[in-house]
Length: 365
Image (cartoon, rainbow, N blue to C red; front, top):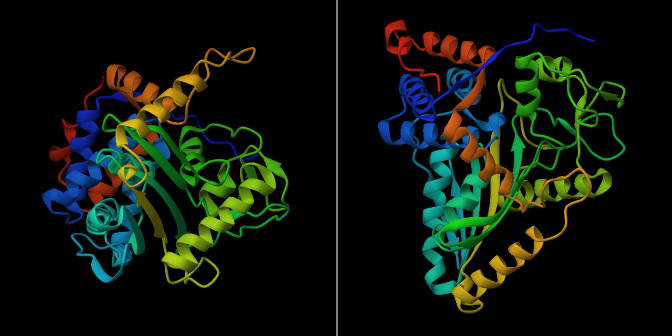
């Protein structure tokens, strides 16, 4: 096993992490609007407990910018609209920003059709997909999002394989309730997102069994080969069932909504581009929206009322863990390991951010 010195974590205020991310993104050339959207997205991912999609992504974004595979302040290209279907090319722009613009464009069809279907292509990393379910829910809409990942070799092994056949290919969906997404499902079709392997490696931690396969297709708890050299593969969740969902996310987002799957797409340095298929539904097209919301809420209460299994404190709905994390981290700060902070500060220096601009930004909680 590869050993790594354990990295310590410190809790920082969300506000100071947002300021740090905004400053780094500004050094990337992002205008204030884009830097604000991306920094808020990343820190909200940290608050929700998804550190794999939080501010630790900034070094990768810096590397992609240098390679020309991510473009600041891009304008998406609205390719075509066919009834409720909108096709948008993000043109390698920051996915956090491009996706919001594309969703706004697609949702223009809802008034007439009761539904909007978005095919988003060629986007920079869109990060936490649940953010877009929350965005749609805030407007009162049900939504389903499926994403594929191209630009690098596949990192998730299909069931029975020892090498990758698709990437983490996330799926998210949510019901709206009082302007919020409740419940909210936000999941990779791998056992975990690749970023969780990076976070474990940065912290010097071993992995839980079942997350990663080694080069022979056997289970391993060492994150280093995968985190540093992409040796081995992530495991699909749920054996053949999760593998099947990952394959269909590839087909829906890549073959249908995009222009290529990971089998056809070219690889490039620090490669992460996304295609996404989004289906956005207006409850009013089905019934009174309040009645739909009440039925969903009643069912959620029903699930939470189930007696927990031995050793469990409560039965949770999808999205409850994120809400618990937000409350905890808002009150006590966001834990970020020293190695991740070091990598971010190193990236900032590479983009010529003066040391004095960074010295007083971070605040311990």
